[in-house]
Length: 80
Figure 1: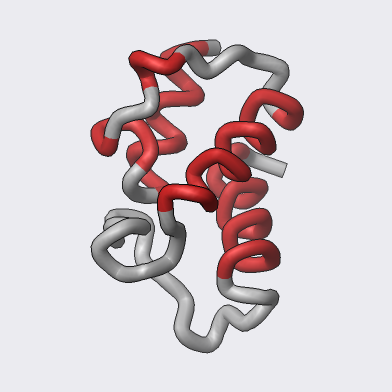
Figure 2: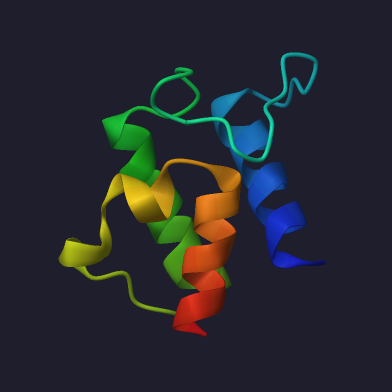
């Protein structure tokens, strides 16, 4: 399964409670659209570190890396 699909599935299951009817677009801001809150970002980071076997450093926890599906995919690809 590709990176984007894994992330979309995780976000849908954990933050939208499995309901994709409200869905989100690849460039939708997680924070602005209420998809993920600050606590959820920490859960997302834990998932990324485990699933993609990488370390997310504190200075990397910025909206440019974590505030949309496309930004997350780019961040993970750049770290790999």
